Figure 1 (cartoon, rainbow, N blue to C red):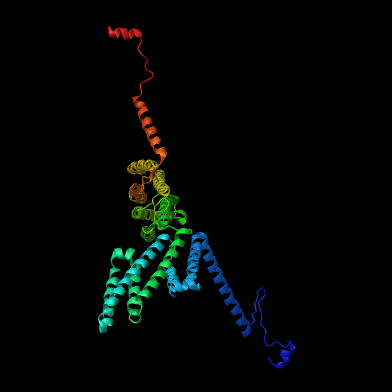
Figure 2 (tube, rainbow, N blue to C red):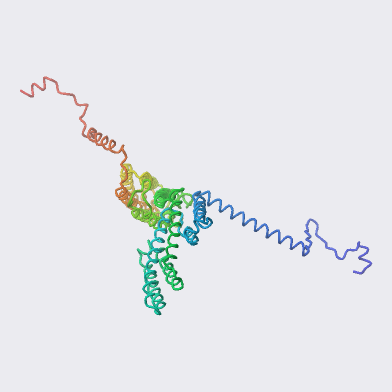
Length: 485
C-alpha cells in the first residue's frame, strides 16, 4: 500500500477485518516502568498476605490454648528477675561477675510444664555439682604431678566423656538423665580445661555454682507458683479426651457403614488415639518429677496411664479396620445390612457408653458401679448380635434366594469386628479398674445404697412363673375339716 492510500485512510498503517458478530480485545504492551511497578505491587501484596497468614496462625495457636502465651510471659518474667543480679552493682559484686550463668540457666531449664522444669533443674544441679567436684579433684591430683598435669587432664576428659556419652544409650539413663549427662560432659570439660590456666579455680567454680543455683531457684519459683501447668494433669486430660474421641469414632464408623459412605466428621477420632503414644510417654516421664498437687499425690501411678493408652490403641486399630469397611468397594446387599443394622448399632452404642463411663471415672477420679453396669449391657448386646449372626443365613435364604452367601460376607466382617472391639473395650475397662485401685479413686457415695436397693429388689421380686395362681379358689373350711378327718 503506497503513501497516498495511507493518507486517504486517515494515516492507518494496517487494518483488521472482523467477521460480523465477533468481538476482538486489543491489548497494549506496557512499558518497562509499568511492568516494574506491577511487579513491585505483586511482591508487596504477596508479602502482606504471608504476614497476615502468619498472624492468623499465631493468633489461632494462642486462642486454642492461652497457657502458651502465659508461658512466654513466665519465661520473660524469670529472665527479668534474674537480670537484676547483672544490672544491680551490689548483687553483681556479690556473685563475682558470673551473673550471666544465672540468665543462661533460666533459658535452658525453663519448660512448659512443671515436671519438665523440675527435670531439667534437677539434672543441671546434680550434673553441674558432680562434674565440678570431680574436675576439682582431678585438677588437684594432676597439679601434684608437675609436668604431667596436661596429660592427666586430657586423659581424664577422654575417659569420662566416652563413658558418659556411652551411658546415654542405656534406656533408663536416656529416659530420665539424658540432659544431665550432657551438662556433666559440658561442665567437666569447661572446668578441667579452663582450670589449667586459672589460678583460683575453686573460687571460680563456687561463683558459677551459686549463680546456677540462683537461676534454678528463680525458674522453679515462677514455674510452680505462677499459673503452673502440670504434666500429670495434661496426661490425665489427654487420656480422658482420647476415650471420648474413640467412643465417637466407633459410633461414627458404624453409622457411616450403614449410611453407605465414609464421613470424617466424626469417625476420624481414632487417629488421635493411635498418634498419642509419644505424648503419653513424654508426659508420664515428666510427671514423675512433679511434687504432689491436687488429686495427684505422692507416687501417683502415672505409668498405669500408659497401659490404659495401650489398651485404647488396641481398640483403635479395630476401629480403623471398621472405618475402612465403609469405603470398601465390596459392599453387602442392603437387605443383608438391614437385618444386622439394629444389632450392630446397639453394640456400637453400648461400647461407646462403656468408653464414656470409663472416661468419666478417670476424669472425676471416682470409681462408680455405672461402669460395671455399662459393661454388662455391652455383653448383653454382643450376645444378641451373635444370635442374629447365627440366624442370618436362614433369614437371607428366605429373603434373598438368588443371592450367594459370599456376597454378604462384608456385613459379617463388620459384625465380627464389633465383637472383637467389645472384647478390647473390656481390656480398657480392666486397665481403668487397675488405675482406680492404684490411685485410690473415691467410691461414689450412692453406689452402696444402689447395691443394697438392688439386692432387696432381687430378693423381694418373684419371677412370674413362680407366683401362685390367683385364679384357683381357696379351699373352704368344710373341705379343710374333711381333709383332716
